Amino acid sequence: MKFRALWILVSTLAVAFSAFAQIGTPGPAGQIGDDITYTMPQGWIAQPVQGAGPEMKAHYAFFYQGTPCGEMSLYCGPLTGSSSIEQAFQDGLANIRPALPYYQARGTQKITIGGMPTMVHEFSYTPAGGGILFIARTYTMIAGSGIYTFWFQTVQNYFRIK
Figure 1 (tube, rainbow, N blue to C red):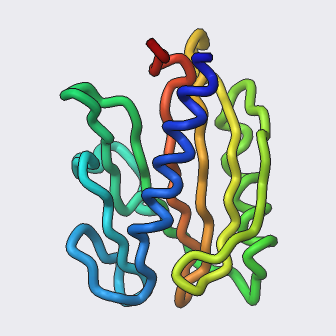
Figure 2 (figure 1 turned 60 degrees about the vertical axis):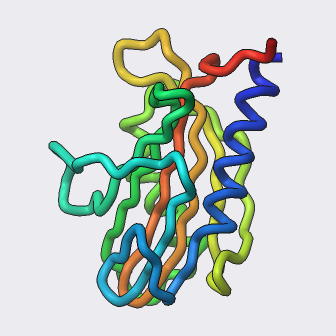
């Protein structure tokens, strides 16, 4: 039952993101250069980006009844050569996977958001120090000369069905 509640949360966040993401049109929440504009749904609060590299462009926390229970980070890196979305996704995964202890893929698919091909990847991992399992979903797309990845995550056992 706990996993089902989390799956509902992650799916809801993904649907909310898909419904509110707007590529190439003005939006009130954030814009990265001229390539991408996005709007975060109600409940997502912008947080300062601290200690992250220059590729992290934005960070949001999702609050439920005043408690942070999810986060989204937006990353942007340069497009190298004429990479396809599939190749850009695979390269990004190969770069980040060593930093994700106990990484376990849960599924990958190609979809379209705002008219742009997007790779969606769901996985779990346990941060260094262990004990807490995170469920994450990323959306990777190419816009202009950049590769953009929206990374949503929450703790697996955070929500409980009552």
